[in-house]
Image (cartoon, rainbow, N blue to C red; front, top):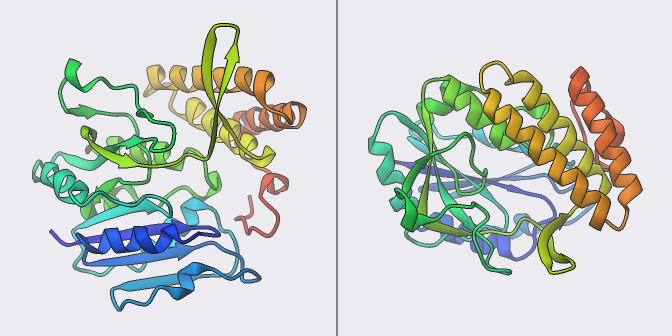
Length: 293
């Protein structure tokens, strides 16, 4: 199978070159969709390989729009699409190991098990010894995801009104709607960083919290609420899980976020807009371009 990698970037550091090099070991080509504003230099401009295409529009369009732009440039003979973030350097056996599962025509998406190489431990609470290596999932993380090309055609474009958060879960849920399976191989690990992840204590208890800028809290709340509302009839268990996730996120924000009041205001605005289906350009980062509502 011919595999083409789509790499999304925003103010990437030198790791981007390592990501592209690792992808070229098992992919026939790489398309880098760079959201870095035109006013800033980008290391993507230094990539010099005929197998690499770099797309720059000069503003931050959001994750979904970057993925869509890259997907529009896929070669016609691509069989499988690999999605990658700018900091996900691939282990050499990842693509062959995951692609082998696509021999099963029912599988549309297969993903690795994201591994926090900095803090240690898997993001996914999966115990490999307690169950099968390959598990069905409602959704998987974008980075490291392999998508069958005919599945991508059937599902359609990534949801640009989500801008960044929950783009992957919305896509995966639509993959399932289209009759394909979404699976995760828990034995295939992908080193990945979610950002500013810190450990906090409450007495003897310890918890890990992701600290994001205020605007990200809006999109986390808005998009999780949209999906929970839209999926409540078809996937009510998943919708309930999304509501629980948002509740836990809100509690952790109230307890541990230094800008808690600004973040809680953004979360509340996100829930309100998620219930109504609207969105706010005021919660798009400065210098970004967002599709009009």
